[in-house]
Image 1 (tube, protein in one colour):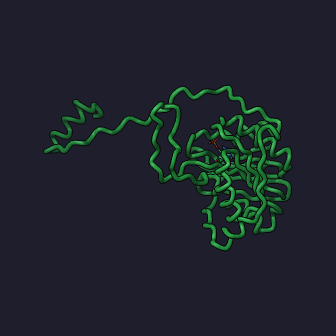
Image 2 (image 1 turned 90 degrees about the vertical axis):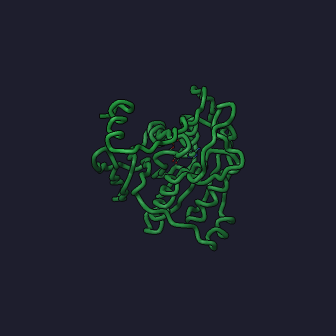
Image 3 (image 1 turned 30 degrees about the vertical axis):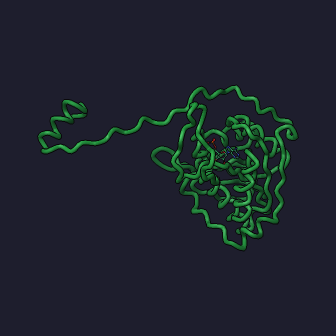
Length: 249
Ligand code: AMP
């Protein structure tokens, strides 16, 4: 089974996000970038399926700037076999990304596509679902367990208030939730080996996909700063403030 895994280059989760002065977006100049954590889980799951002899090849794909090669090399160091970068400098919407991923699916013909459930920069949580719709593949989102049984895939999904297990006929699209696995760290020898693994660079034009978007970001704003707290002298004062100022009791 061939597995395609998507990897998005995002702001590292430890970085404090700053909004650009003109409110056109988040300032990405000189900040640490990393692989989206849910994509790390996707890579880990695919590599485990390969280690179990279930997957024959793991191909990782990213849509983004040339610098996203860094995250693809990380995925190769974690055990993926081959990488594809669809180079696009402009910030693309989910639909454009899903269309590009669909073109890569058509080219690569994987039996399974694993994506993160959401990218921590935009929190869109929609690319996997869009790819499922565009390809017509069965989809299992928010997976916390994936089991391959012949040409079926049993996916346990994290849903509100519990777990749901669905059986999907391959080919399928799966998106990863946090509890699916704990990603490994890349070892130094594997980081060195990853430098020699194949990385193909494609363009939206070469894939015949228009990245024009029906969506325009009007304004990005940081959340309002929290005002400082105060110390009260007594329980009576606290109760009085909760009742009359905060009006919560
Ligand atoms: P989103 O729908 O933007 O929250 O992203 C969900 C998942 O789709 C991410 O975890 C990635 O696996 C995948 N994805 C989104 N954007 C990209 C991209 N530009 N390149 C590769 N994968 C992406």
